[in-house]
Amino acid sequence: MKAMIATTDWSLVAKALGDAKGIVLVTHKNPDSDGIGSQIALFHALKAIGKKVWIHNLHPVPRICRYLDGAEKAGMGEVFVHLGAVDTIVSLDCGAKYRLGMPDSFFEGKTLINIDHHASNNSFGQVNVVNATYCATGAMVFDLLLSLGIALTPAMAAAIYVALLTDTASFRLSTVTADVFHLAAALVEAGAEPAVASKAVYGSNSHERLKLLKMSLDTLQLNDKNRSAWLHVTEDMYVSTAADTEDTEGFIDYGRAITGVKITVFIRPEYEGHWKVSFRGVNGIDVGKLASELHGGGHRYAAGCTLAGTLAEVTEKVRPLVSSYLKN
Image (cartoon, rainbow, N blue to C red; front, side, top):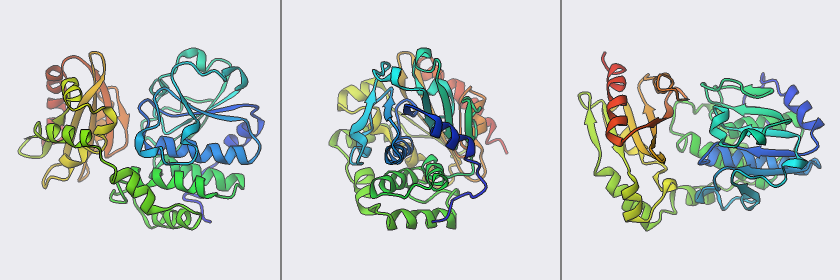
């Protein structure tokens, strides 16, 4: 098998993992398929070389990832009962330490390894491999396993495949190169099943999700001479449809798919009095830079931030900034 990026230096990560007595793998709040897939693949790999390892996140594994072998091993919440047995934490697919959502006590006295592909990542670990060239953190885990000499099992391959599938929007983004397809082929050869992943991610819509999608699409507005698309959900929508945050996955792509739209904005409740604002950009629009002006971050064409206020206040704060990126 061939590494995605052969020049990536994994030596410090390999040493830290080799020295570790107990390891916990974490990813960002409200985890997605890239974070979970990366965790599960690395979990199986570290188990294979005799390491004591756990998976723990603030929030649960999303429904679309629960088919993965190892998903049932993930713990959740601010309290991690095995913390005393851990000397090493591996953060995967998280652009900032606060996004892990864990208390300061979780990190005290631990070696923190930070593996991520977000351009906005500020290298918050003691050991860092941050490279925005990678299409997914799962692809970074693939390269790490190669560097460690760990053979892919079907469980590892399936977990990395779903990370690759979702973070490339089904191989539709500009981050997709010939090497990405070579990686996908290698994962399938190792036992990943594309049809199973596709069914779990795209073919398992609940009635609640579809009701919420209808309500969200009813909020769709085009601004900036039809170059920006805006849509949102509210707590009242969650209540009336019995849907939840997980069900909003992919809603933003409906705006991005509109002809002529260069920036799509999707706003949803994050926690009391705060809203998660997600951005998607096309045609050279750097929404990662846009999000950073709002103290957020992400990738060039996919980024976000969290803002306080009412929905109207947040929208009015974001609107002129979006317009400024479309002024030419």
